[in-house]
Structure formats: structure tokens, C-alpha cells
Length: 590
Image (cartoon, rainbow, N blue to C red):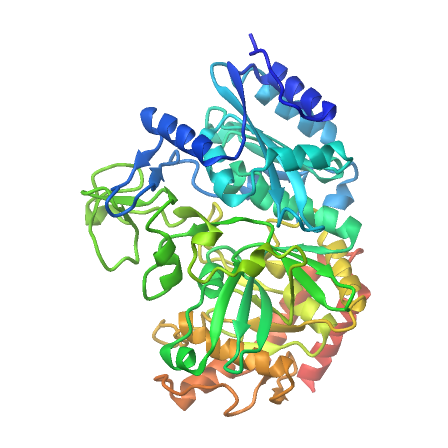
């Protein structure tokens, strides 16, 4: 029998929705979250007592915990993720589709009685600075205390603020989630953008369960953004201050596990720091971009925390991340040392005693941490965190950067000749797949604007929306393409990456300021000789030439492949993109 539900002072429509879900799922109790640290500590202690959360060494990692996922529940499951719109064409060929009635019926069957003996948690949250006109509301109903702990860090759990705004008529995203039995054959994530609703069953992992993240902040928000005239994007936001103290803001899109967090928290090399260059972090994963009254594009970070990939993170690759991972962190699927410290591949110190599944670790077993192991931590704990992340207005974007993992062809950096070509370059993005999603890794796939798994509607309409946004701006950002991952004949990376990427950011800033020229590589503008500062790098001229070369034959094949990819979005593909692609083919052939 379902628990009796005693409601706090919340709007009637919310109360009715919660009561209906409780009747369907049959929980033993209902907990209305207040977002307090006392609540966090209480839930963490409960999970520790149940053996679902492991406290780490309090001397080295105070208030840090390790969570271990089920071995079959360690990544996004895109093949089980659906967009459910009344018309199939609204979801587009980039999404798996089910009609809403069929999806709701399937989920009702799965949810029926699924919370017997469990607690139903009600988590009201704000995405974005609470006082921002660009923030949005959500409520997730879940039977996972682990999810609640993560939402405490990833969102702003503010029940009074959420309920009062809903009572005032503001819409909110309704998220329903249950871990179910963690059976991969009974796992689905359904999105209903027309209803501002999400239903997820059968997973406790990351974006499958933390519905405020990819499900709300990208799939549902991208639909809202199209309706309301803004953009919800899979982008970091960073602030770079030049040696003269002038600030610039960059939004950059990379597929998961392709270096977004490292770039967002970049520490300039000593020579740059000595000259006064500074980089601060506004967001590492998601940006909501709005045309401003001044004709520029402005961005807020809707998240309050980081849910980052931890393998490969070290003092050499991301010292800012390492500085914030010593206290008040939830680690998921990392290894463990004998004295209770987290361990993952990439650390130069420590030796794992147990792998991510809790088994005694031996080298021949392979990685101790799962390749998609994660950390969850408040953004404010990052040493490079910018208080501008809490600005209600957001920050003005001077440049948009697209990037991915490409072993060849794509240069280190190039600039689109205008907004339309920038949209084409973003639409044509391709990257080698990583462990962030289930399936094979190292496979090259098209990932427009790094939104392939996350756009909540037809990509043809999405590209058109990008073009409309650009046309509405009097001062649109410059659009750039970068590739830190080009490899030489020996298989090694040609570019050192990490902190040295500021050299590329400097060129981008100087282009935005109109200080340097560029040569026309047909597919984009590239740095003139000497304009990319390389002092102090062990990089010879032949390597730099390789990094900045435009292989015309290779690009001819690339443009042909891009054309075939874009064909999949006809008849909704904007003619302006098709025409720009034809123009590039003609110029390259000439």
C-alpha cells in the first residue's frame, strides 16, 4: 500500500502530480527535499549504513565518498533514449522516436509498484542563477538517495523559490525516475518536450538518472530554447583576461570526454601567468545562450556543479580539478587504495588495491577505474571558479569554438568566414567516440555542435534555429574550429595541449580584436606564420606545418561525406547550409 503523502505548502498542480506518482509507484515513504547540508549529511550517512556509499580516508579526503555503479550501468544509453513528440518529424532522424501515448504506457507499466519498500524523494531545483530571468525550474521524483546527493551539488535545490515561482504560473520540467531492478532489458529514458516531461527507469547512472543534467538542461531545454528564441548547448564557458587585463568570454562545444573540463579550468603556462594572462571558469559542460539587447550573445551556466570524467585528470593535465577533488566530492566508479583514497589512471601517486567494482586489483585485470568514472563537486570549489557564474545577466560571448578528437585532417585551429559557415562547420563536427557513451570507442562519428545525443528535436530545424539566432545579432561571436588531437606518424599527439592551449585561445582573442590577419584555407581562415605564439615550446616548423595544413584532397572527401551526412536531414535542412557546402566544394576544386 502506498505511503500517505503529507504535502508541504506547494502548488496544487505539483501536489496532485506527486500524489498520482506515489499512487502508481507505491513508496513506503515520501521525502520532500529541502536542499540543506543537514539533509545531504543525513542521506549520505544512510547510504553508508546501507553499504551503497563508501566514505573515503577522512585525513586525505574529508567528506568524500565512493559510489559503485552496477557493472551494466556505467554510461549513457543512447540506444534506449527516446524523444516522444506527437509528430515523428519533430523528433527528427537524429533521435529515436516513440509516440507519447505508447511511451507513457510502457513507462506506467514499469513504474507500477516499483517503489514498494523504498523512499520517494521530491527534489525541486533551479537551473541557472536563481535571480536570472534565464533560469528555469524542474522537479525530479526519484527513489535514489544517490541521485539526490548529486542534485544537491549539480543544481540549486531551493524548494521555496521553485514552489513560489510555479505558484506564480511559471512552467517547470517534470522528471520521474526509478532505478528499478537495474536490468538493461528494462531500461528506458523517455523525453516529452511538448509536455516538458522526462521519464527514466532502470538506471542509477549519471545522465540517465540525474535528470536535471543532459535530459533537462539539453534535450528539453533545447526544445524550450527554440520556442523562446535562445540556444541550449553542450558548451563550456570560460573567461580569459589578456595581459592588458581585457576580458573575453568563450563558449566551446566538445563531445563528452574530449577535454571540455580541462579547457574550462585551463591554467596558463608560467610565462603567460607572469605576463598577466588569467583564465577563469564559468561552466564546463552546458551553456544557455541568449541574444542580448546590445546585439551580442550572452550566456549563463545552468549548472551549479561539475560531473566530470576523472581518468586522465592529474596535476599535470588539470591542476584546478585536482585542487577541488580533495574535499566534499562524490566519486563514482574509481579505484581505491589500501588506505581509502580514490585512484584512477593518470594519477602519478598511489597504487590501487581495489578496482571500480570492489575487486582486489591486479595489473593484468586492466584499468582500476572505469574509463567513464566520474566526480561530482560544487563548481564553487574550483580555484578558477568565476563569481560571474552567478550573474543573472550572464556574460557576453566573444567567440564560439567547436572541437573534437580527430587524428588527422582538421587543423589545430581555423576560423569560419562568417556565421553561416560557422554553423556548417559546427553541423559537420566529427569526433572519435569515447567511453562516455555505451558502445565501441575510437569510432569516428558526426556529432553536430556536440549535440548528437542531446538535441531534443530535428537537426534540420536546429540548424535553421542557429542561423536565425545569428541573423538576430548585430555583433555575433566569431566561430572557430580546434583540434588538439592530431597525431604524427608515430601515433603520438603533435600538440602538447592542456595549459598550452592558451596559445590557441590567444590567437582567437586577437582575431576577435582584429589585431592579426589570417590566410584563406578555403575551409576556414588559419593563422599566418608567426601569429601563433610558440615561444618555449619544443615544436619544430614541420610539426607546426602539419598542425595547420589544409589537405585539399582530404577535405574534398570530407566535404563529400558531410554532404551525405546532411542529406539525412532533408527536406528540413536549411538551403543556406547546402549552398555554402556547394560553394566550399567549388572553391576547393578551383
